[in-house]
Image (cartoon, rainbow, N blue to C red):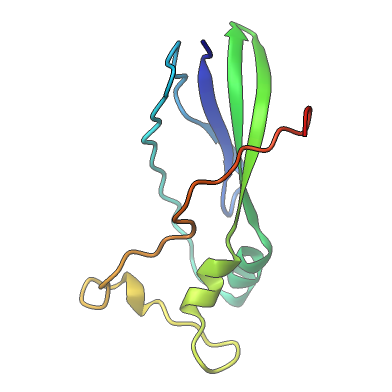
Length: 120
């Protein structure tokens, strides 16, 4: 059995964060949540459009020895597309307001494969 945990870089500061290690679980459920305050600007929107959120899945073999299991990549361009209005270079954040938020914004609503750079 593995001791899995996930690391990722927080947007927009790119500080590396990680989840707690799920020790010896056959089907770990991380149920991890993070919030990142972002001051929207044309520069930030451009970064979001080009940024791919990468989740690294690690196995803690023993203390001090970790092995990369694989990567999951989530492009954030769909987020930019969802806030873009019909006018070019104009964006609306109305979906964030309670009175306008009818549906949650999901970047990915599907299972994604974990890609291993070591074994392909």
